[in-house]
Length: 134
Image (cartoon, rainbow, N blue to C red; front, side, top):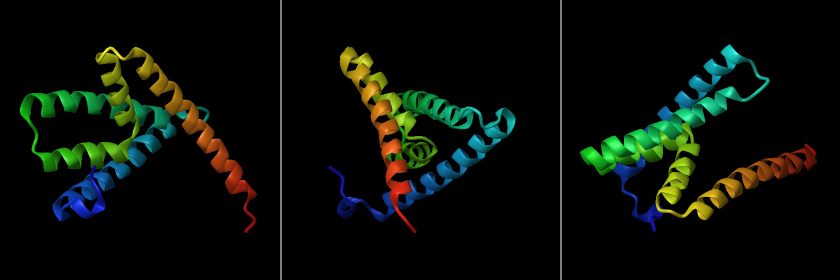
């Protein structure tokens, strides 16, 4: 298990650099899509999630499986950039891996629980936030 105590300075900088770029790109892409499509449906977020998921699968196969990407660049790209661009890419890759391993029930359960629990958590967070008097 990785802890803060055993992360090198280089690893931390790589993740933070990638994360900063990923967060900026999420904002730019999502805002651009929202400008074009309107705010009636979260097309911006969906676009970011789909692009990030595609990038995770594509780059994992190309750069990790076929080329053998340097671990520091891998942290920058996958944990930092794609992690900040969309965590949905990680969720999607993990779900795909479960399907690929023949663990269909676990994959479906992963989808059901992630989506329903996260929407529930947002709802509970909204309720908690609204209940605080400032």
